[in-house]
Length: 148
Image (tube, rainbow, N blue to C red; front, side, top):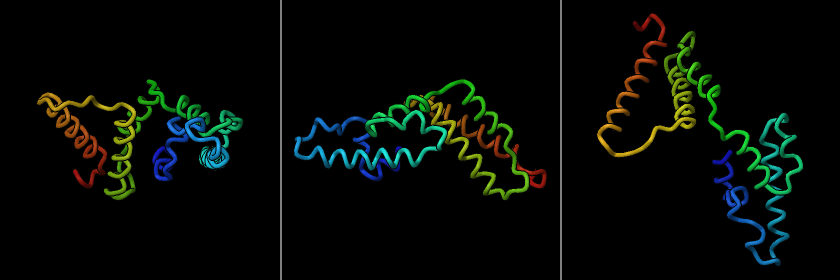
């Protein structure tokens, strides 16, 4: 969702850097219109189950903050479930490329949820190589017996 908002050049409306008070009163009506459009877009982009928490938001920033507070948390069950999906994914009846794409998507989601610390030291580079090896092993373990 953030990427879509950024693509529309409206991130300032949701992150608070483009609040109405920062503009002259003469353009407040225009700001209100753009805010209403963004609020409407956010509401139409989330499932109906989530509308209750943002339906009465007065601004796109308030709706965004509510969604951010609810979904930007890393909890143990979420990372466990994602790790479990990675560990149990296998090729099954799909092609190798479809299987790899699914696995890659899960890895990327996990890395976004639990990012590795960054530095340029040799230990970090060694750690990254180790993670790449683990990913390779996971990929190979999930392939059908045909590829053994």
